[in-house]
Length: 256
Image (tube, rainbow, N blue to C red):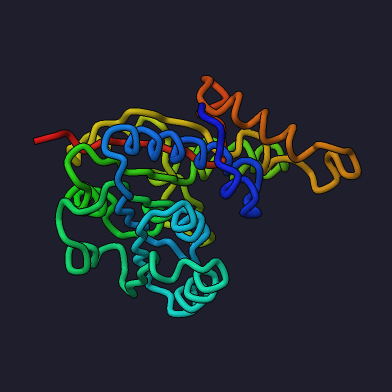
């Protein structure tokens, strides 16, 4: 993995998110090496700009599609504080409205983080992501991992809940979950392939970060950096990758 730009490493993200930033940084470098141009980035479900604003600070043009008015208000404030309001555009819309608010084939990089768990039809959402992505462009997908949820419940002694997560077709606890589904690496890559996108990379995000007790490493110098390095080192190694809290996948739209 490539080094993460200084503008990104100090955005306040949990160390486990270094994995996602590292993949995105490599994609940005690849694009710049080929064209030297500014990326057109579409952040679907981008919330208050946790990814959009740092990317705009790197000089890229970012459009955030987000249904929450409160999140968009926070996005505007964050962009203003960072001095990048000219490079951040906000659109209030749901993910399933993407075909109505984004032109086909116009985004060099599409972010879809923690969205597929919430939509009614993830296959249709992926089709829409593929349509708005430019040929040769990339789609960054972050989803909740069923296996991690099962282990988390089991390690906490909630064995029936773990069994429910394991056996439910969508990896949720009926009537108790706030999301509609969880994924596994195989099911996610199959879904992405069905949309016509080509999976290039799969990483685990949060291999141990979300399982650590609050007291872990408390008071020890360099704990956060050590966790970051551990997450980067294990993110692509099986079986660690497939046990992480989230799965991050980078797919590419084939050239015409």
